[in-house]
Image (cartoon, rainbow, N blue to C red):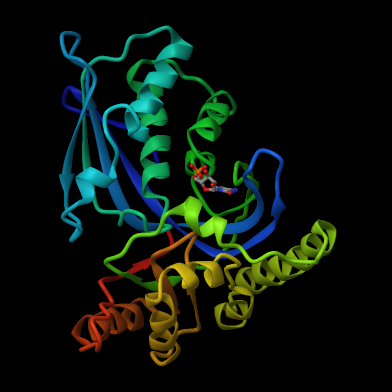
Length: 312
Ligand code: C5P
């Protein structure tokens, strides 16, 4: 994500992410959960543009390209929208009163577990850092990002990473192969807080969980770095999936559906509701997405918005 000048505006592309594995290590005293997850940015982008206008209150205009008609409402009002909060937060740090207009072209599905809101927030920090000529290094932006949301710090970087803590401790991972995915985002969204609230209790200690999680993460990263994506698929799991399946019955249907379409692996991303299949090639991903779109499903079950994408 690099801001660039377009006429009198600044513009940035904000990618989505997928969680290739997600383990919950335990609940923390602050109510959040300790995580270990491998996240990869993927080629689905929101576009954020900022134009300074000293006479105008800071505002956000959204152009929704999603098949979710209620997208604009889900983005939050002026006070709690993450883009405006990010700009105001950076403004406070820099002693600048933010004025002007943001335009957001929305392509990343909302309430999908694909990090759209977090990516937009990180994009706003990077954009304003440039537009206001602040040139703060990433380590000064990172605490603001972490305050805005658990996934926001990941999007300040430019590649795959293992994220730990609440999600804000980032270890970049390089040499991952290009991966191809098919994603199904059902009409129902998913609330991150509710999904975390459905985690089954466990007798395992945090240390035992950590050691198991480290082992499978090691296998996952190593298999990917060797280019053996099919083998890596064995280690692609999401601890939040069973809880999410209690809240949303469609998840079990998606699991069954994806088990029959020749994926190398399939899983829910983040806290859902998007479900992901890892495919052999870009062609295979596109072809499978088309097949899923044409599928006639029963009993009111809708696969929803289906598309192919790949890692950045
Ligand atoms: O940080 P973020 O706003 O994305 O978190 C949304 C909600 O998800 C939190 O309020 C919390 O209930 C849950 N969460 C959690 N542990 C995390 C991240 C999120 O319990 N590591």
